[in-house]
Length: 157
Image (tube, rainbow, N blue to C red; front, side):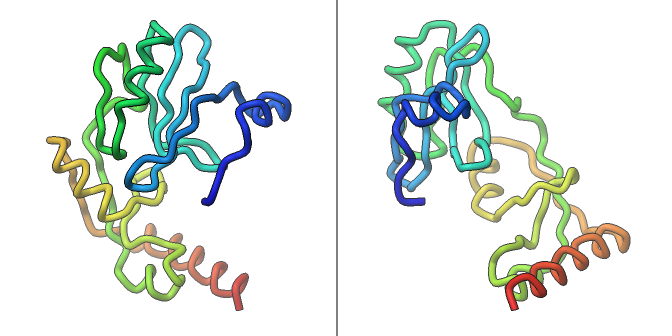
């Protein structure tokens, strides 16, 4: 993604109260988001949402910590909660051919609840001391992903 719209655009279009946009050294987008009771650093922001957030009671502290972030692996100091919390990552391996046959629109690994995951995320999680388990997909799970693959192939003929 090249650039995000201005802070005002997000508010004017009812898409959130985001500000202080930054592109980190690893091309990850971060910004501040106003939550109900806190200010959050939103990490890996995309048009469809963000990967996780660090919530702060003090907005000034959030601004300060956001300015220090260098990569997606940067962990700010002084946050009160990280959402989602760092729970053990449980992944399923569906097969390498899904990646190549989908022209990289699918990954060989997914979370158990169906969210795309990538090997880089696994490396990051392990580097940060996070527990990661990967199991082979069941026949039923593979069937679901095979249907998804066929739909992508049809869509992008």
